[in-house]
Length: 268
Image (cartoon, rainbow, N blue to C red; front, side, top):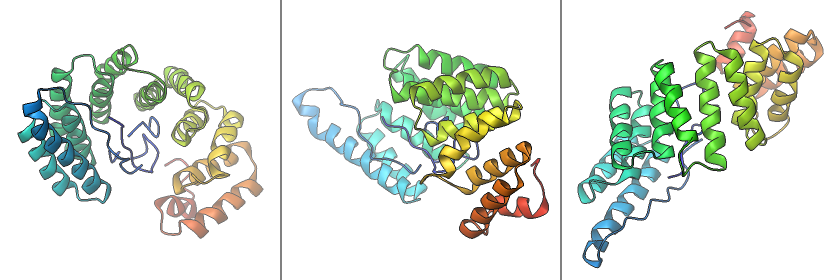
């Protein structure tokens, strides 16, 4: 199942069902798994798929409780629907209900042991609860899973890097984020988190390269502009700082990032 993320970059806030923006966007169209069964089961399975698609649409529009109701009906029709449990978990994550999110992902993994998506999802909710060691173990298991490939691998490396960064393991975080960047160099989520980690490591010049890639394109956000400001401040380029600050004020005047700039709270 395709993962779903908030437009905010992974690791910068609560993810509204991911990768990690790459880590870690609003929900993309759900493509439910194929549900095997006899001809007699076809209608039941069609109903479950339809309910899951409706749940994704409601979630995309911000109607989390309605989406959960649709998922409940999907699971009533087909109680072993792994994708339904995974989407349910991301909806709970968006509500910051980590207990139920964790339970949903555990149920998905029990139904499909070794599944890369379910291992990734479980690792992410554990990371959000600061269970960094067990989360990292699940990310490693996801990377070794048979179904892990392409963008899904980049997403896992991104989440692993973000989680390691939050755990204070900056060297390992940079290694993971560099892996994500090698696989998906065009990802704004990867670029943001890589730049953030590089700045924390004192590599402001490299950080500038990655954050500028975001701020010079369509994915610029209050978060990326603020990171760019901090990078330019670290490099002593006040002209570039002012240009980014002007963009931040013009485009995101009510953002917490602009408030921080006005206060001079560069270490927040």
